[in-house]
Length: 303
Ligand SMILES: [Zn+2]
Image (tube, rainbow, N blue to C red; front, side, top):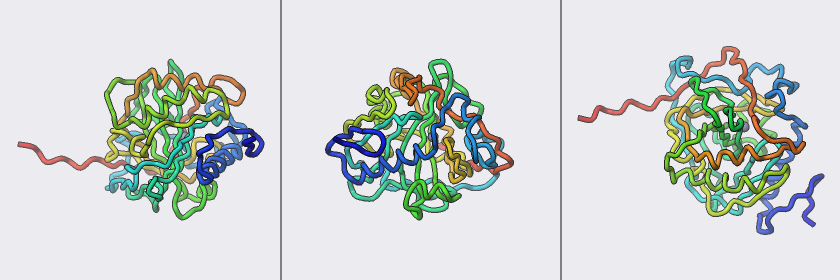
């Protein structure tokens, strides 16, 4: 039997030992956070989630940002094909995919912006609402639309060995936040999102996983989102233990995905077999934290 730890998982047989180890580490991090849920949108979470002064998510408004130049984000190996197979899991809190290294060997990573180092892509997951309500975590420019989703691409500072070690340091993690709304805009470049959402019906139950078909690049998750403009600030994980270790980068540009794909998330179940909906945390106080905004440079006038 394929037995790993307290729960029996069945993974595809062609999965590499390295990727399996990364998935198990990610699972262990999630389970170490305890048996939390979204019944009160996080208001009942304890410890740093209650007492922290640099918590996330927060409201982000262009008018309330610091007047300071922010360099662009530099993306490395984002356009390289990832090693396969890729595994999407229902961990009871979200649909989560651990990101393996690229087929070339190195991991996709980012630097630039106000990032204090090089940050490797570790995993991607989603926060959603329900058919009638938005599920975004960051409130960007007062934009609330029905059925919106927030995607988080979690990165780890290369100076730390694991995500859990990185979460103990203020410069440990960087998360890219991308808003997704229902729409029809044709966009072949976010084919990565489509590939992931196509497998969501296979992970309805808690602790189930599914293999994602075909090749995937991390850039395909970002698709056409304008990455030259973004908010950036110091905050926390939006799940327990709410570690204040995250340099957040949130894009005001919104991706569009067909509603028939988004609504698949609303069928997922948590560890209590209840509908896994509204898995977002309430807005937190900024407590005077500076929020920075990168604007696209003005384009020269075309005559
Ligand atoms: Zn998240």
